[in-house]
Picture 1 (spheres, rainbow, N blue to C red):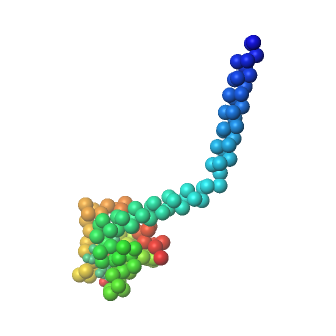
Picture 2: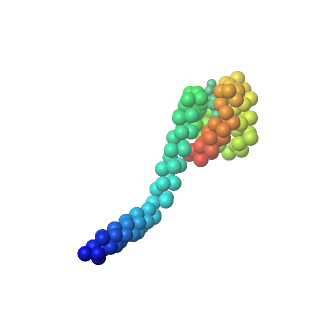
Picture 3: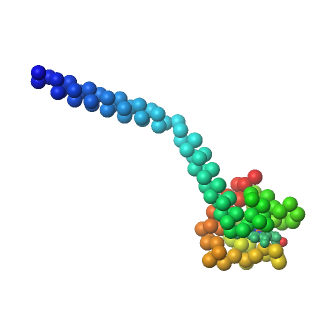
Length: 120
Ligand code: HEC
């Protein structure tokens, strides 16, 4: 009679260990997928920001340009962040407006630059 509760506890422990082993095995190998999903979400957030700030109106939804002025092509940019930021802050020519920190933050400019430089 005294053996039964012990056997029950043993079974419980055994299934707990099994569960741990199973979940441990299942978790491996998916790291690449997770990274892809993360990168996609980051790119989508930047694309949305690009549209919200009005950049997409003149530069196209993916920075591919407006189809007329080749200088509006800013995807795959070779500009370093300092140049890029200067262009956004100071504007350029008569068509590229200057953006104040109230309109777009430094962090947001970096976010857009990170996205555009790998945008093909
Ligand atoms: C009203 C239209 C318009 C809007 C809105 C606009 N741009 Fe521009 N942008 C231009 C034009 C036109 C040029 C090309 C100017 C030139 O060099 O003649 C340009 C140039 C640039 C350049 C320099 C590209 C180079 O190779 O010299 C960058 C960087 C840039 N824009 C980023 C942005 C970002 C980021 C936004 C949104 C925050 C934005 N622009 C919003 C029209 C616009």
